[in-house]
Amino acid sequence: MSQPFRIISRSFSSSAVRQSVIKNVTIIGGGLMGAGIAQVAASTGHNVVMVDQNDEILSKSKANIAKSLQRVVKKKFAEKPQEGEAFVSDVLNRLQTNTDAVDSVKNTDLVIEAIVENLDVKKQLFAALDKAAPQSAIFASNTSSIPIKEIAVSTSRLDRFGGLHYFNPVPMMKLVEVIRIPETSDETFNSLLSFGKAMGKVTVNCKDTPGFIVNRLLVPYMMEAVRMVERGEATPQDIDTAMKLGAGYPMGPFELTDYVGLDTCKFIMDGWSQKFPDNPLFAQSPLLNKYVAEGKLGNKVGEGFYKTKK
Ligand SMILES: C[C@H](O)CC(=O)SCCNC(=O)CCNC(=O)[C@H](O)C(C)(C)COP(=O)(O)OP(=O)(O)OC[C@H]1O[C@@H](n2cnc3c(N)ncnc32)[C@H](O)[C@@H]1OP(=O)(O)O
Ligand SMILES: NC(=O)c1ccc[n+]([C@@H]2O[C@H](COP(=O)([O-])OP(=O)(O)OC[C@H]3O[C@@H](n4cnc5c(N)ncnc54)[C@H](O)[C@@H]3O)[C@@H](O)[C@H]2O)c1
Image (cartoon, rainbow, N blue to C red):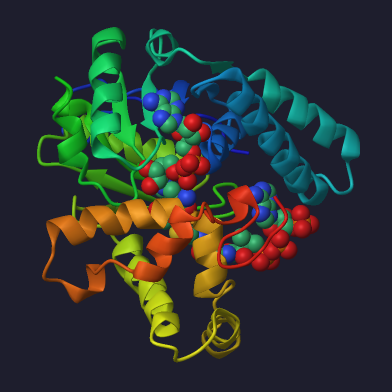
């Protein structure tokens, strides 16, 4: 595993890349994404505090991380199980939890927010963190669909704000999209890029546009699959089979929607359909809304378009 980066030139040479040392990372949200980001950040040598609303949720997050780490070491340390055990124990030692978000950022270098996809809730959180975190700390959101600028304005550190958009499952998906707003300083942007790489990810740069790169292409595709079912053109099973065997995707669009979470997909579509009412790609889907209203949120609850093991 790579070590946390330690660059770090504060020199004023014109060729030097100015960036900050990121060693202490706070992840707010211990759900699907937060737990994955926390796991990989701790696995790559960072000190991590993972925050969620209560200890019960955090216990589940930690159990999910432990399960995922076992899958990782089974392969990575297949020939050296003792080294695998030592690796897991080191990772878990670097991972603390806290239910108090404000308390958790007092000594942080970087905050990555991965809570519910709701602008008001994210703004409220960041406004509180802004008062408690060190001046030098960088803030980033893992939002799927909300403009980073709209979240960042809740703070007084627009120059130290950006987007780090990871993909589910974080331990397996190699990409992180790094998003800057006009106010993001070069130093902050370079620090975010280096941090993404220090986590072992490939980074791509993107402007603060709806869905950045991946979701701007992927979410309309997933929603068009749902509309095909609404129009009675094919079943979810046949669409999934077709896209896996005919287009080489690892999951069909319905398996993927279950995997991402139907609630998260609905939050994305609610935001985009409100903001861009004339774009048919962003139109609401009655079928998706019905499933969410019935509590069929996908794999995380054991049922979405399919019944799955929790
Ligand atoms: C909406 C948001 O903003 C953006 C998004 O995130 S969009 C979603 C992006 N993600 C995708 O598109 C995921 C598409 N799916 C895939 O790439 C693959 O199906 C997958 C990598 C998730 C799983 O691979 P697959 O071969 O289908 O299944 P599976 O046999 O369960 O896993 C293969 C290996 O992957 C690894 N793996 C899978 N999930 C893992 C996890 N959570 N942690 C650790 N390892 C994992 C394991 O090594 C597993 O081997 P194991 O069974 O021996 O433990
Ligand atoms: N699910 C995906 O595939 C995916 C991929 C990339 C990005 N995202 C984005 O990441 C974020 C999180 O998504 P997720 O799928 O992990 O959701 P999730 O529902 O699995 O987890 C969200 C977690 O945030 C916690 N939370 C909510 N409000 C909080 C607060 N004020 N303080 C602390 N914790 C709080 C919840 O208790 C929950 O555990 C969203 O913005 C989503 O759009 C999701």
